[in-house]
Amino acid sequence: MRLSRLTRLLLRLALAAGLAVIYVPLAVVLLNSVNADRTFGWPPSGLTLRWWGAAWASSGVRDALWTSVQAGLGATAIALVLGTMAAFAVQRYRFFGRQTVSLVIILPIALPGIVTGIALNNAFRTVLEPFGVGLGLFTVVVGHATFCVVTVHNNVLARLRRTGTSLEEASADLGAGPVTTFRLVTFPMMRSALLAGGLLAFALSFDEIIVTTFTAGAGVRTLPIWIFENLFRPNQAPVVNVVAAALIVASVVPIYLAQRLSSDVGAH
Image 1 (tube, rainbow, N blue to C red):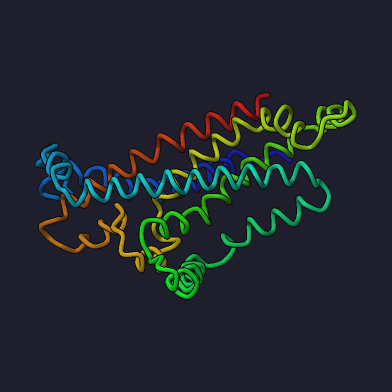
Image 2: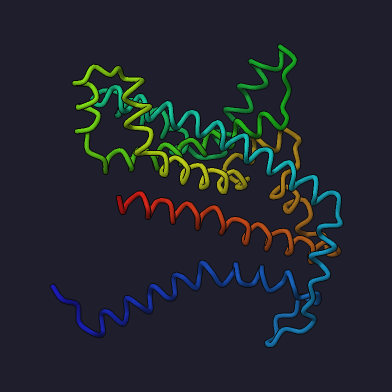
């Protein structure tokens, strides 16, 4: 059924309004990062980049950045390993394993993030602390990896669903075992999807909200936590906007690359 011209116009206006709701606040953050006076008139006055230099000169910002990068790389590494293992299980046990593995992997993200954070926090305190393992950077990595692995797994699973099983069946007919088939046939087909999922996982690892209770208990200051701590300090407002703007800009890169890789996967 063809839509009328008025209906199409209304749909486009609704889409534009939705995009404005999403992107205008981000644009305000970017504008405030170069607006020393934080005035909201137009054209804005006091545009300067000196606060970017001030932010980089802050040892607290640099330390938080390094902590976030370490946590992001660690969580992504775990997500890639577990995502690959899950993909192997899906390929090896196509009928029973796909549903079982998917349920186990997807379940954590279906739960409220703060509940998962409390559960992980309690697990570390009751199981690992008696052995001298306290909350710290490692626990932040584990908390983020819990969510990052879902991103990797979903990306890889979507790729496997778009791929036929003829090559894998031919490999099995030639006498290749499941490990050999996965290494020579399945893994090359999902390599781009795995890399795209890893990039998305790295971007996701900077999201502190999903595991706030858990990571706050670890006593580790990442960039989002640094922003929360300094958000309502008047003298820190310009630097907070700079750090927030830098996170926005930096997140665009892995997300854009992941989208390009996903598009390339879909083209094959």
